[in-house]
Amino acid sequence: NAGVTQTPKFRVLKTGQSMTLLCAQDMNHEYMYWYRQDPGMGLRLIHYSVGEGTTAKGEVPDGYNVSRLKKQNFLLGLESAAPSQTSVYFCASSHRLGDGYTFGSGTRLTVV
Amino acid sequence: GIQVEQSPPDLILQEGANSTLRCNFSDSVNNLQWFHQNPWGQLINLFYIPSGTKQNGRLSATTVATERYSLLYISSSQTTDSGVYFCAVNDKIIFGKGTRLHILP
Image 1 (cartoon, each protein chain N blue to C red):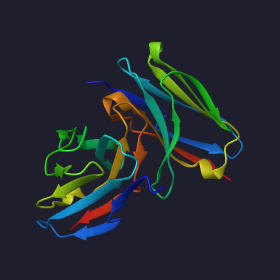
Image 2: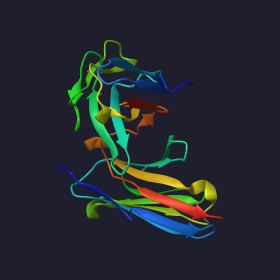
Image 3: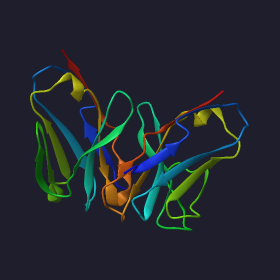
Image 4: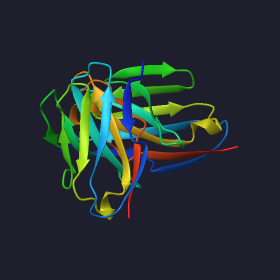
């Protein structure tokens, strides 16, 4: 039972490069979320999805795009990476809004 | 929007001590969850507790939704309890900033 799987686990990007983070869940959850975690800031919501084909902005969406083409996958894209996007990124899913979250193990991204 | 505040922000205790972590929220909520982030960064679900009290071994949690707070109790602390504890208001998709707990051997 894999739960929520994030790839890659680590990545170093140069300023201006692009990349996509993949989140996959095998629990048939409707809701999926992308958070970033910075020291002293807790977890801040970037984007979330309430079902296949839907996305919505969270607290800190600027500089990121997302897609949910398949129910089990939620992609987070950085079109032109900036050093301010150096962070640890977590994906989570839940069956419904308000249900308990299941988290992935995180992606540590460094932009130099 | 709803505010979620956790206290204390940092806590250092000797092994074997008990502790109480608090999560206050500024508006009514339907669901609340406690997580432990271990030193390796993993977020581990502790309790999903919209109301009432739950216990799991040395840990227990109480949420009093009408008074807008939740408490996490850790008894007989062990060094493996070290890390950051977050509360999350699930139906508002908001996390507190966490309490960093350090247990000294």
